[in-house]
Image (cartoon, rainbow, N blue to C red):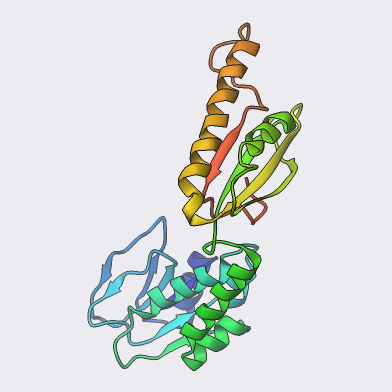
Length: 238
């Protein structure tokens, strides 16, 4: 099995040309295969679409390592570890698993069988920096006054800190939005959620009175939006 992240159809076509007479199976989001039989074949699969092979794969080659590790995400490395381990688990017990390309601590940990120490070091760094999963996070987006009112409800809670507010992208060209990221200890999760949802309800009630003459179903661009445990909160996404 060759496991890819991008250009899977083109890769399958190239393999079909290079390995004349060999059965090539493409499994991706558009052409998923749950299982393949034990007949010889070269399977090109994207992540999450890897079919189960009868008897296990005789070899697994993981491609695009460098590109996947370079994804601008706090969780890029842990995502790669999960994707690669899931694919490797489909190999037969005596089959080789080859990680092609890439480097760095995670690749070294996989190659040397020291994944657990890598995970321990990673969680240690997250604790020092107060990044998930060491803490929980929530993002509060809206007009500057709305966001300030929402985060002010958390001022007296220990174990809570706020990053921002900072300018945020808006689908409405005329709106100026900001976003604040709230980090909080797990023990404060219920109380933080309660207070932020209360601020959300209060903002919605205030908005209704301020826009009584506006057409039904059209919300103010500056209205509060709340997202808890958003995976992309540190990735520049909203």
